[in-house]
Length: 201
Image (cartoon, rainbow, N blue to C red; front, side, top):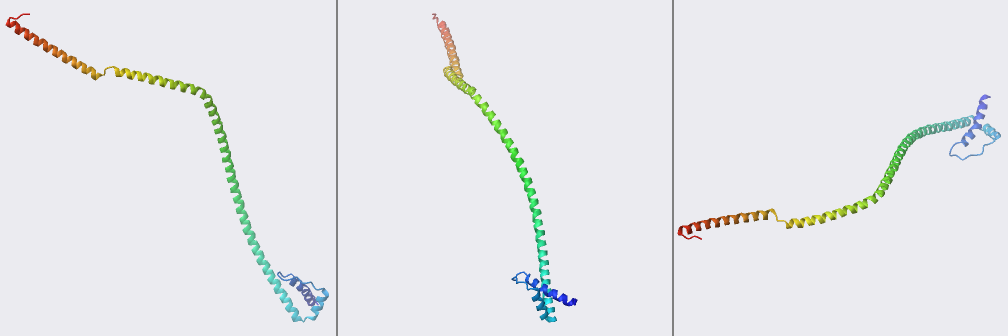
């Protein structure tokens, strides 16, 4: 009695399992009366073969599901590793972004400081131009006056005898003195000779 009930239940479940197989088109589920009628018309060997076919299909389906579970587990592990890597990359990028923001803030502060210094220098230069222009004119006037004085001094220097000319004049004067002394000596000799001859001035 129990064996007949198990066979009837297997026959009832077998068409449902066959209808749920992936890749097969869904067929309408027969009514319990039709299944009972079909089971009554089957021999025990046919029932056993049907049960074995159903068991094999369920085993294959279980193996396929286990394979899919393993593949999904591996995919989940890979995705978890990729997520961890992305999390680390995100943290690294966040740190780099923070450092870049700090550098940008420092550069902005330096730029503001330089702009303040430039504004202050520009104000000082603008105020100094009013003094620099008259001073420049005065300096140019002094340079012109110095050039004029230098030119006059150069003309005077050209008019004054040079040392070479002074030495030349001194040499001429010394030569004239020598000639005068020679003439005096010659005159003295002539006078002495005239005196010896008895000629007196």
